[in-house]
Length: 121
Image 1 (tube, one colour):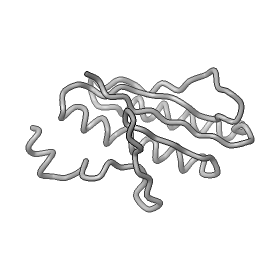
Image 2 (tube, rainbow, N blue to C red):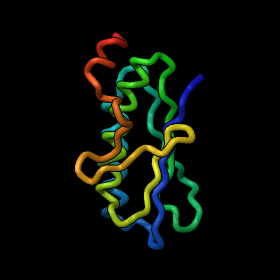
Image 3 (tube, helix red, strand yellow):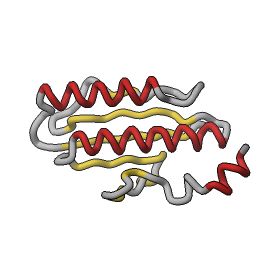
Image 4 (cartoon, rainbow, N blue to C red):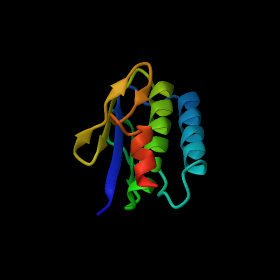
């Protein structure tokens, strides 16, 4: 069963042209650098008022591929949040909130543990 990584960013004002360009570039770079076989990040285009970004991707079923995809997408979403810092952000892995840290960004605790990565290979 696939796990979904979803995000939403809200604020009262829409993204300005510079922000839209930066966000599009970051999404494009994230998709271009995605691990082989990983589904792409697909931003929604029909957004309700006050929602400036929203989208999702599914993680691969294989645990190692899911973990490498999660690492990649957390890094991409960290860059997106830093590009639109004045919005309220939520990133969820299915129903669980992905924690935010101002210094390191989005990360699921333990997801970059070298022993875990070695065990999954």
